[in-house]
Image (cartoon, rainbow, N blue to C red; front, side, top):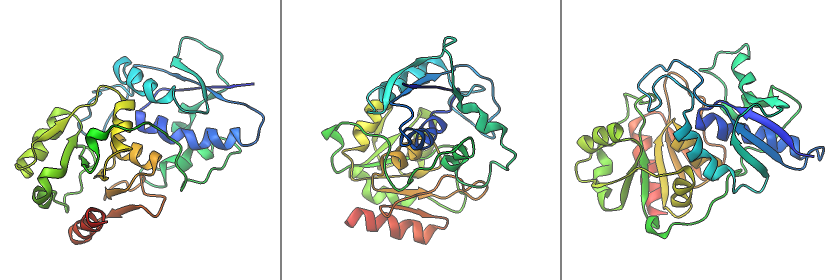
Length: 256
């Protein structure tokens, strides 16, 4: 018997719902997950966001489905069209908590009787050798730590590939003019394949970091001052709140 669930996004929230679902599967009552995405649910963001004023549009949903459908615990996934749903994962938004606090994947555990070891990966992907040895960098506008500058990354420009939307790339490129490579992946699966081949990932709290966390690749997080709720959970994940530790940990990953 399969478990039918739905979620309206963001993609990062969708990724962070999976440990909760894997914890349910471990109880052996259900075999696999049928995961359905609800699109165009309105929302308000605290800063600039590629999706404007919705949690998930059809373009981003289709991108996410490319990755979801290859996961071994997924039986079926697609756009929600009135399927019978046993767990509406949007219920986490009704929790009586301050969402600037805590840890995002653990919020889902409060929806039911489920636990999962967050130091283990829960997203798998293939390889894309074009990114072998590359440093993948992302910096979303919403979660920037004003005490951290990425300018030192310019020294590593030949190895750097910036990922993300064009506006974010323009801001990063002004800070690191030597960095010339920018890619906007056509799907979440393409991004995950690149992650699986890169040297390491560096960025702030946003979906690109959440994917790195879900896959447990080598990663460095620019920690957030206002809402530090997206953090590393394994020993190859690092984070920093201040500039000097950020640069030291970057170099440690680079020299590894």
